[in-house]
Every structure is written in C-alpha cells, then in structure tokens.
Amino acid sequence: MAKLITEEQLAVQREYITKLRGENALYAQRTGRARSVLTETYGCQQNENDTERIRGMLRDAGFEFTEDPHNADVVIYNTCAVRENAEQKVFGRLGILKHIKEEERPDMIVAVCGCMVQQEHITEKIKAVHDHVDLVFGTHALYKMPELLYRAVKEKNVVVDIEQSDGAIAEDLPIMRDGSDKAWVSVMYGCNNFCSYCIVPYVRGRERSRSADAVMNEVRELAANGVSEISLLGQNVNSYGKDLDEGIDFADLLTMVNGVEGVKRIRFMTSHPKDLSDKLIDAIARCDKVCKQLHLPVQAGSDRVLKQMNRRYTKAQYLEKIDKIKKAIPEISLSTDIIVGFPTETNEDFEETLDVLRKAEFDHIFSFIYSRREGTPAAKLDFALSDEEIRRNFNKLLDVQNEISKRKNEAMVGTVETVLVDGVSKNDAAMLSGRCDNSKIVNFKGDKSLIGKYIDVRITEAHTWSLNGEYVRETEGR
Ligand code: SAH
Ligand code: SF4
Ligand code: F3S
Image 1 (spheres, rainbow, N blue to C red):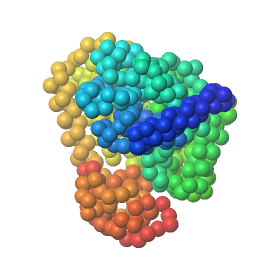
Image 2 (image 1 turned 120 degrees about the vertical axis):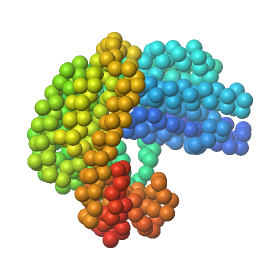
Image 3 (image 1 turned 180 degrees about the vertical axis):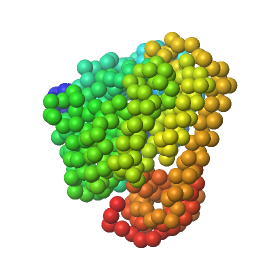
C-alpha cells in the first residue's frame, strides 16, 4: 500500500485554503484589486508538475496569476538543485526581487520552495543573505503550502519548513494544469539510486510509488476532460511498484494506461538502464498508444567512470540493451543524458562516451558539464582535466551528436507523420509547431484552428533540432 498523507491532514490544508480565500477577499475589498501571485519553475517535469499543484491550491485560495513581478503580491520560486547554474539563476532572481520589494512592493511575500531549499546549506544562505524571503519550504512540505503561506501572510517572522518526511504521498491536491491536450502524471517520487554525482536522492527522498488506482483515476479523469497525451513521470519509472504490494510493475501500468479510452499518446520518463526489463521493451512495442520513443540516460561511456558514478552497468551492457530495443522496435527514437567532465574523467574516458554516441545513434542527447553538488560522494574527487579541456570535450560531443541528429532527421524527409499541434512555432510566428509520435518537433504552415488537433504532415526538410513539413490532412488517429 502506498503510504498516504491522511484525510485529516489534507482537511487541515483545505481549511487554510478557505482562510486564505477570506484574507484575499478582504484584501480585494480594501484595495479594489485581487491579490496576485507569480510562480516560476526551474528544473525537471516533476517540478513543473509540482508547480501545477501549487497553482491549483493558489487558485482555490482566490489568487489571480501574473507574470510581472512588479505587479505580484506573492512570488513563489519552485527550484532545482541538480546543477549549480540552476541555483545561481534563482539567487540572481532573488537579488532582483529584493529591489522590487524594497522600492515598490514592501508587502510582497517572497517564497522559495522545491529541491534547492531541501539542502540545509542553501536555506541557511537564503536566511543569511536574502532577508526579504518570507517563506521557504522543501519538496516534502508541498501539500502544506496553504498553511505555510497563510502563516507567512499573517506572521512577521520567516516561515521555514524543510523537514524530511516519512515519504507519505499527498493524493487529490488541487491542480491547475498548463494546457488542455497534454498532461503530466507523476507515478512515483524520489530516487534510491544514489548516482555519485547526483543530489536528487537527497532532496527528493526515497522512492515511493503511487498506487495504480490513484494513477489510473487521474488518467481517466484527464481523458474524460479531453486530454489525449499523458506523460508518466518518475526519476526511475522502471522501479515503479517495487515498494507496493500490488503486483503491478511499470510495464503493467503502461498497459493499463494504454487501455484508457480517450488517451491517444503515452510518454514516460526516466528509465534507468540497469532496470530496463525485457517486459518493458515488450510493453512499449505492444501498446499501440505508447510512443516509440525512449529516454535512456547513459551518462558516460567509460566503464571506470560508470563505476565511479555508481551507475551499475557497463558500456557493453548498455549497448546490448540499445541493440535489443532497436531489434524489438525498429522505429524507436532514442535519447540520452551525458555528463562531460565527471571529476576523474580523462580524455581517453571521454573517447568512450563518443564511441557510445556513434554506436547507439541517439536521435537527441541532453548534455551537461559536471557540476559539483555538496554532500554527494563525487564532490570529494579530484579533477583529471582542466575546465578548458572539459569545455573542449563538451563541444566535441555536440559536434559528433549534431551530425548524427541531422542524419537521423534527414531519414524522415518524405515520410508522412502524425503530429499533435502544440501552437505557434517558437522560431517563426508564421508557422505552427507540433510533435511527432517520436517526439521530434515539426514546423509547418497552417491555420491556428489546428492547434490541439492531430494532423498528418509530410516532412520536407531536416534540421539538427527540428523538421519542416507541410500539412496533409486532419486525422482522428495519433
Ligand atoms: N532520474 C533521471 C534524471 C536526473 S537529473 C535520470 O536518472 O536520468 C537529469 C540529468 O541531469 C541526469 O541524467 C544527469 O545527466 C544530469 N545531472 C545530474 N546530476 C548532475 C551533476 N551533478 N552535474 C551535471 N549533470 C548532472
Ligand atoms: Fe540522480 Fe541517478 Fe537518481 Fe537519476 S537515477 S535521479 S541521476 S541518482
Ligand atoms: Fe532538479 Fe529536483 Fe528535478 S533537483 S532535476 S527539480 S527533481
């Protein structure tokens, strides 16, 4: 059984939502305008999904939303700790907010939540350096946001809640989703893998799965409301269900979601290579709605580095899995994460990473320069390469991959692909953009009334990062 935040605990928070709504009504009477809140999210989809919960609670509490900090009564930053630059961005933003608060909006409530503040040294720094922050709450306190915000509004002291929890899951929190065609559904929280470079297990806690019933209820409700693309989220979805006694693993869950009427596309992330089972490969191949796309982070190619990273697979084992997937699902689109410059990584080690790229032929990679995370085992290791050498390797990685990505995109020219139209293209306001089953972005000319629909496009041109196409027809399919 999934351990849950109790109904009583949730009822307390609903009372605080009511109290906040009362406060907000008084504020509106007094000032002639509703209290407005700005939320900003850093980090992964799971953080985005958490922000959707935060926004749901804020909406129910009577807040309006704004994107302008000069106009905000409350600002909430939902933060990421995975790399230093994510943290620096937040500190930069806090610096700007300090001026706005001092000069224009002295009553502004500034809140910082999420992964970054779950680290004690960061919360101490915020308290010491950013005394305009009124509220700090970690990933385990998310469901308590109404109470904490109410206290921050009422009290003059700084409110802090970064307690680690026992891992209980809060179900049925309000939610305000971004968009109406696609939705994220978290199936599990936390991570048990402790890769030696990674902060996530420390800031998100141990793995815990939602019950299959809870996941399925959420998916069914989404489908009933017209959402057709579901992305199932977890730091390591392949261990879904291991902590429950339901006898349902991730492959079973995929199969169950595949059976929901109204759902047309299913995506999921992330899979850990060591836990990618034949059963899951089979489920991806068999389930017609599961997109033929797999994100399988390899991180590095050298067995020595992989060992030091505590990834628990070798390069050969990884490539074997890739072969198996390609055999089972020839049209599969593959992506991965790569870390360049792990402390002990040498140029020879790095060559092994390039070799993985050439052999696996990913469609797309997400590459990162190693960032030292305080409290992780890798933080104690010495660097084999200089910053300059690491930067050079990083650029080389991009060169090698860009050529592969372009080649794989070129192979799609002339084919007809079904895309879900997302909206106006980011590159060109005269174009629309959508994603293929394999997640590649296609830009094409078309009427805005197509947004939210599934259409067929013929691929006409390939770029490194995207495709161009032309409208063929609307389709009921996917
Ligand atoms: N659970 C997922 C995602 C974790 S964070 C997974 O295991 O794949 C996303 C990516 O950030 C990781 O895959 C890794 O490539 C990168 N990352 C994590 N810690 C990092 C660090 N300290 N420095 C640089 N990149 C890091
Ligand atoms: Fe971090 Fe590794 Fe867990 Fe992914 S699997 S979140 S990289 S510890
Ligand atoms: Fe960042 Fe937390 Fe996600 S550290 S990557 S926001 S789990």
